[in-house]
Length: 436
Ligand code: HSE
Image (tube, rainbow, N blue to C red; front, top):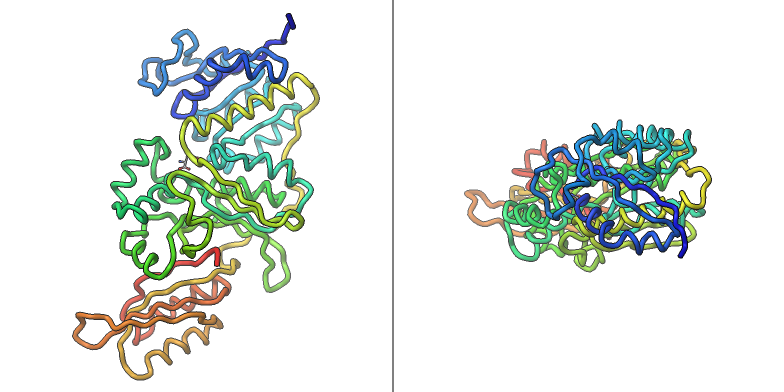
């Protein structure tokens, strides 16, 4: 009989993901331990309320409200509390006591990642966070390890499962946003505070983490331009469909070279129109898909469940196994590099495409006036569709204008000039086009 060393695992949080991690560890810990040659023992689960209703029945004797004490006696700490505090203090305590830490806390990493990575490096411990982005999808490890020798140009895709679920229900089932949100909540996709999902914060946190890793630069959440799905109504979804597009909330980070030849990082989150034939439109429900464009590797696509307790628990357990292997093998942890220190560029430096829907007076010279507004701002029109609008007193037309790629600053200035123009009755919608 082989005598395995025992590794003590402390779990902080027994919410949607934490409860599933506890269940999987209790049921399959021996098998996971055998894979690394250790005995993995879940020594305790820190919770706020011992009597709270949980999705999984957990052994009462493992529950404790004394998170600090639990952390100090552990080899591996799994933090699934979410939020900044007490998560940050507990993680720092765990690292400083020599434990490796696994976290799915994207908010904390997006705000304080560099500080936590430094703390881990100083004591030779390791911070793992595969569950922070894309739930079940392996994306952190591929960027950190598999693609570590390549040069990433662009990452873009769907990184928030609940808003994808909501937009998908609106697109495929004609649901209202409220109906779709209710279902997303029941499936455990939404954050405890759903505005984090709906307003794009969750996606922005993930983009900050991905951008930091991909471009070896500290990218704080404040550097990620963000728009949520608040303005995406069933009418917007339907108009997009009639024009051959699907509305998706996208997260994008890329290397951008400015007009002055300066290379920087553009990071942004917004709902965008994706052409119906693009693979992203086949990403339904709570799934995520992340495209990575790397100089040597070319285009890669990572796809799978982007939300859900059990799915996210899979990523956490992968990190538990990695941490256990590291403990057995010994040696210091490896921190994240931020050596490139690329400038963080605002949205105005991004090159995007707009699809603008206008209502205009249907009179001679109107189209010429509109075209001149685009020309004055240096933005090039790619497509124009005009339909006569019914029901108005004077003849009016609806114009849908698609642009070529242009600097966001020029496109935004164009829309401003259109709004100010006397021939434009209404700028009905402005959406960016991505993936075309
Ligand atoms: N609320 C998140 C989402 C859960 O919808 O993607 C996974 O991070």
